[in-house]
Amino acid sequence: MKIIDSHMHTIFRPTKFFEIYRLMGVEAVISVAFYPIKPKFSETLEDLFRWMIEREPNRLAKIGISGFCGIGIHPRSIPGSLNPKIYEIIEELIYRPNVVCLGEIGLEKGTQEEIEVLSRQLAIADQNNFPVILHTPGKNKHEITKKIVELLESFKIERGVLDHISPENIDLAINSNLLIGLTVQLGKLTVEKLLKIIREYKDSWERFVLNSDLGIDIAEKYSVPIAVQRMVQEKMDIKLIERISFLNAKNLFGL
Image 1 (cartoon, rainbow, N blue to C red):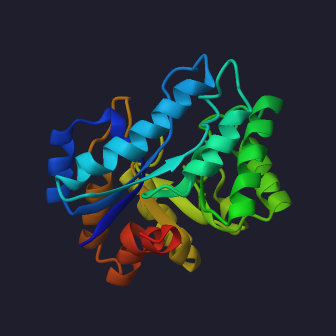
Image 2 (cartoon, rainbow, N blue to C red; image 1 turned 45 degrees about the vertical axis):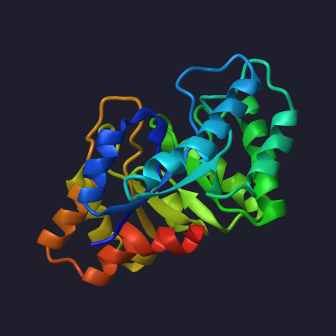
């Protein structure tokens, strides 16, 4: 079974991990931008983007994994001294090889600063017809997701993934135009909750996208291949599994 992990943070994972990941069927990953502390300067994010674009795809290619990336300003990674030039840099970099989306962007607390930063990035996505991967938070999930959806509608964004969807905000995701990101990870969806969502919302399975959100934190390392294995064991339709674990991401991001 072919697998794409459509949302993770590869820079925080060692090469040995990806050797095992490849053996478990993962053929491609999308690594999205996130800095684990609030950076002081916009230049910090510039270097992060360069690392993701210039270094990571080559590292993963040596293992047999196709490495792609999303660049953007995560709501928890907004620089203390935000230089507006960063938006010009982002718009230039989206045309670099292996950059397939703006991400991970979104809202965490829904502050005015976060909304402004997200709006500037959605404008870039709109003007360049470029896909987005949108972070939804763990707290006040429904309320904050509603704000994100309203911004998407105002910018008429229709290509992307509304991510970290749970029973708390899936009603909003279903009514949006984006794909629905299902993150199997500690603090997000368990495999059992994933299966329940797939069964309950079977009319929307063509919009589901599976990911791990693996990064710097303690995590279930192989949650995506394990989830795919469970779907097979549960005798779910093979075409459904292929859509969720591979084809939806492949088609959206042109991998």
